[in-house]
Image (tube, rainbow, N blue to C red; front, side, top):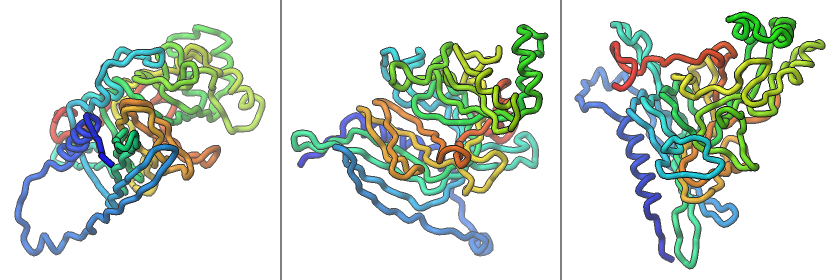
Length: 360
């Protein structure tokens, strides 16, 4: 049986090489005995898993390692090729395109007390998907993923293709304050938001088509999204009791990126730094699960390592997966943004030492 890799393997090799290049920039320096005695660590354990699903064969290399890193890259561009069709919802040139991409942050960056707060990764892996056609085993997809990940992800996010499941949350009063900052353009909306008061509300947010709020078109997922928000037909929700809380889902159903007069679709570029994992936590055990980046030359199902027994159906091209884990009250989201920040955007955290906030 012959094996074929072709341009996909070369593209994936460049991707992995880029990851290694900007995650391991350090100079060699000798250490004395005292410095060596203060260091402890554990070598990474490599295991290999093989599996099959439908007519695909998979080989996964698991690196039993914990990684802490601060990275900066001028541009992360994956799936850069001509793409058309009704599900391509922007004119961006790549499936995933992020300028000034960074993982981790630097607190007090422009002072003598500068401190690196690294992005944490647990149990990273690399996986390959194959198909056998006419006796030739062909590579059809590859991905890099993490068992858990936590920390700051920064960049000018111009487009994303894939699955991004987040949640916004906060008291309804924030929406009222934001809506009425320039008066009361619609009395009914003002009244509904005012009566809701401090009732806690929340909503799932996903990748959307700008202007319509559609997450799918003719049943197919969109690609090259430039916005995130509450999907068309979805709404704000509340677990609080009482009549007002029970009416919130009905009153706030979204249509054409609007609900109660509020914009419900937001440019990804509004969010310069997004915290991945539980906000405020530095414990990797509270990190987001199931994150991966993949490249494939056809639609490939990848095993969902965070939701046992499930598969993630990816599109041809580049794909990013930031899923929620579990359901209902037990759901854990990779991205949680309070309602105030969702409406106004998030500034970039410093990712460089000194006055330069990005691009170092």
